[in-house]
Length: 135
Image (cartoon, rainbow, N blue to C red; front, side, top):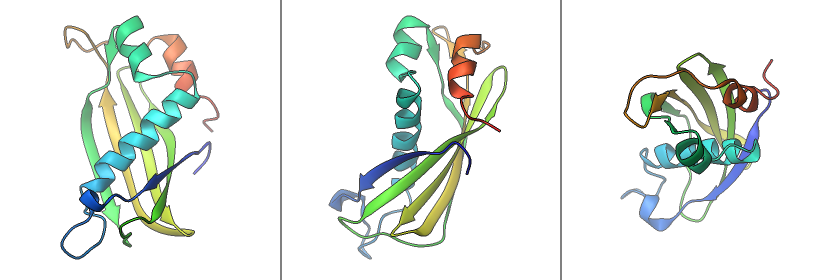
């Protein structure tokens, strides 16, 4: 993954299932942590998007593929990058690792809407911040 932002998340007890491993729904939360950390590192918080620019990025598509598992108190590394930027959508791509072993891959696609939930274009300044380091 090029231009990857790395976040670290400790598996909480409430995120484990009866088998003692990270429940598949935990990846939804971890992808969000990775995405918001990446955006914040580029100077673009969700708060700024919503409060200053009047934009929201609702999830319109999401996926995760698990190939391994993590248990309570494991520290999972989330690698996040911007995969694609369109006029009215953004795709983020994710990988989850434990001790260098990939546990999951995933993506989320976000539409761009204004406060009235009308589809709108990403402003050039937002596109530039999100596109930092893209190939």
